[in-house]
Amino acid sequence: MTLTGERDLKKIDKTAMACLLTRIPYETEIRPEMLRMIGEGENFLFNKGYPGTRIRLHGDVARIECLPGYLEKIITDPGKELIVSGLKKIGFRYISLDLEGYRSGSMDQEIKEL
Image (cartoon, rainbow, N blue to C red; front, side, top):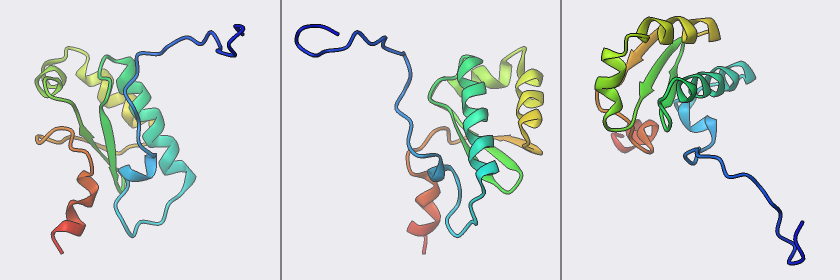
């Protein structure tokens, strides 16, 4: 600690992350396993070179929302099958890529449509 009370903390190059509950549709009964899967899935994608990518959970479907430029990268990624198998090992049955990409608050869309 310095004399001014500041700590020497390492900075991590990581995008801000909203609560994992925002990845689950409204009126869904939340289970800890769901949050674990989403967190592990997003960390997995981050480590594969897709920071800021979100997984929206719809039952046993992982709907991947990625930042601009990542959509084509994921589709053409030679390791795409490793991404699919890695997410399935986490517990997702189906893996989908949202063609609209990342949209903050996309789970709120069904509320806006009412």
